[in-house]
Image (cartoon, rainbow over the protein chains, first blue to last red):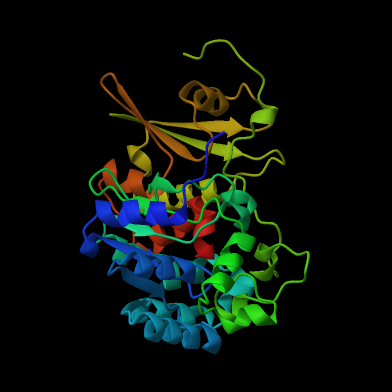
Length: 235
Length: 110
């Protein structure tokens, strides 16, 4: 049985491998604050950025500010392109995600600024964990990032908390007196934009607190193997 | 260069939404004539040409493109990278961001 790498070890390896200006922690304003606490305790002056979609809860902005003060950090707030957001709002209004699905809004407010930032990095560090959703069960602690990287510009993504559970994260937060987002006290498990996030009940998965109005979507890019019977050679 | 576009028909007989979107964007961009072959991967028919090609090339998603150049065969499952690298016609930042998100559904969770 393979032992899980300690998050601090993964973090230390990453921060030693890449120069400070080429690696950064992506801070969502939620429990991934533990990465910042660990990096600071390891003695690294690490770059930290956060996606400011313009639609975050006031509590999240206050929390980011507390983290900035507590760790004496510069936190770079990545904002979406104003003209692109302006066009979306002009054409579809401020709540288009309720009607058209959240992808377009997320693409503009999160993916575009993140992609722009990652073009200037060789590696980034996230708080993704395997227990966060069924699509994350195989998240490794280190991976080549094919979503944002390319052959011309390879990018490494570190997920030091991949093998930690939510309980592990909260044990660390309490044991180390790490600041956390006040929304967690009100039942929010997964914290995103204000209109798209709600508290979850005791036995609800955290994903149920996001985009709850959307039905199970067409996740049909996969070619259904169960429908496929074996064949002989294909020309 | 020989380019094959494989699009999928779902079990209910409908064209998959992304395949339809990709086809529309290829046509709107004037790229459709660059395709040499269009195959259907029909989930109702494992022997359909697209399903057979997917199995042969170990491709697990659609739409996808197969580019043959001499003896080299390259499979592209990411449309914007295909546009940029093969057709040398990059899409808009907005379109590319949407595709990144569609292909990596966890990214909206960041």
